[in-house]
Amino acid sequence: MRRVLVTGAATIPWIVLLADPTVGYSAHTSLQPDSPQQIRTDHLEIHYPEGEGEALRGFLEYAENVYTHIDSLIKGALPSPVQVTLVSTGLSGSSPDGIVLSLEQGRYIEPVFARELTRLGGREFVGEVFDAESYRFFVEGLVAWVGERFETRLGSMEPRWLWAAYAFMEEATYFEYLEVYTRASEDLGKNVVNAVGYSLVAYLTEHYGWDGVMSVMATMPDNIEVCSAMDEAGFDCLSTWEGWQVALETEATKHDFTQVPRVFADLEVSGEGDTRDVGLRVFIRNPETSSYLFFVEYVIVDEPEEESFSADGHDFEGRVPLGRLPVGTKVLWEVAVWSRTVQTWRKSGWQDATIR
Image 1 (cartoon, rainbow, N blue to C red):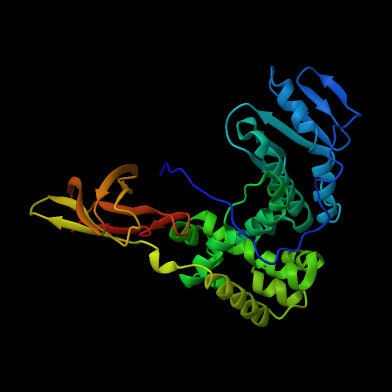
Image 2 (image 1 turned 120 degrees about the vertical axis):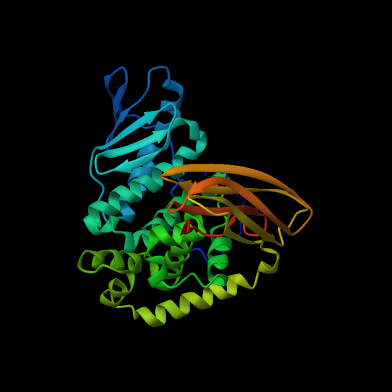
């Protein structure tokens, strides 16, 4: 679904800051140009597009300092040199081979670079299990927590504590649920699940320091879930989880979640014969505004479709036609509406049915 994520600044409680990573940022002076589109610093080998010299210079003002800061956090686990590829357009990301940074992100490249370095260093420190689905909510939270140190000075942070508190109110902060990352993300959205992981890392850091987080990471290779890793690291998982839940509950009391929309969608099938008239009956309750859009995404015979609809008034009930479909066809669907209260999408969750 093609959605625009709207976020806003939030007051983040009880964050434990490490040494300020922005201190001493300046252009690196020992550059060794290898070719017109490649340059080498102490710890980075940077490839950049022709004509992007100004963007490269901006990146070099902080790149080495970010590397040094992240490497100190991950106990010297970062490789050197790290392969960094700047691209004019596209998506940023990392793999064991290096990091790709999209220049379309402008000044936000700095926290993105910090997050991807954290991901790269985490893989080196932990090993293959770092990418296991059962750890992903924790890993994404770890990456977000580190990256936020660099977001702060830009004056724009995602409302991660709000999202984590929202997940708590949805009773979605159990390890067993979060460790099935793909399904949890489909239900709540990746930003919400990642924010829950972020809040856990923040809680561990507040109570046990950054070394406590690293001790959990050190036990990850011998375990396949967060709880057992925490136990082996010397933290009683149950008591830690209970304390974290209290912190989430405390945050939840700061917000009025009674204003959050509720979204439902049921498949309607009518007619007789080999094909049936199929549609979705959509219900939206408490949509927060009198005029709004909602989005319907569905998959029929492996063909994904998306439609948007406008609704006037408050609560909505209506039918979205899907056409005539043969008996035996499997249909998957989800409906979403934006919530100002939680600054994310409220969704019906993916459902599926076979036409009978």
